[in-house]
Length: 122
Figure 1 (tube, rainbow, N blue to C red):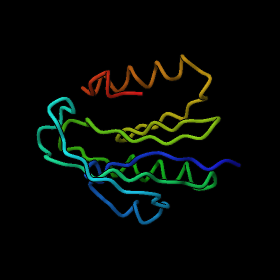
Figure 2: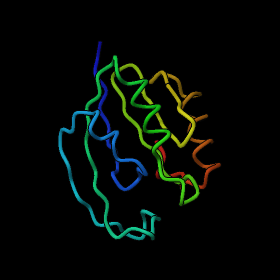
Figure 3: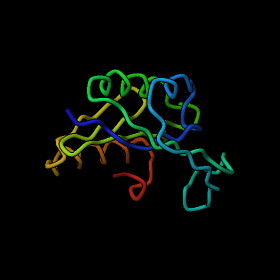
C-alpha cells in the first residue's frame, strides 16, 4: 500500500502528541501574513509528514480530535497518496477518492461553512 504525505501546522493542534506518531520529513517555520487570515499568530510551524497506510485512519481521527477549537474551527489538516485524500476538520473527516470532484466539493463546502476562506481549501 502507498503511504500518505501531507503538512500539519503545529500551531493548529491543541494536543501536539499526534506529531510523535507520524514520521516528520521536514519542518519549516513561516511568517504568517495578512492573506493567511490567522491574525492570532505571527508565525507557524509546518511539518511535512509521512503516514503509513495502516495508520492513516487512526492518525486522521487523532488529528481531528486535536485541532484547535478556540478560533471557530478554522483549522484543517490533510494528507494524501495517489488514490485517496484525507481532509480533516475538528470532529469531521473526509476520506476522498482523488478522482471524485463531488467528494472534494462536499469537503470544500463543509470547510467554508466553518468560516475557512475558500482559497485556503483544497
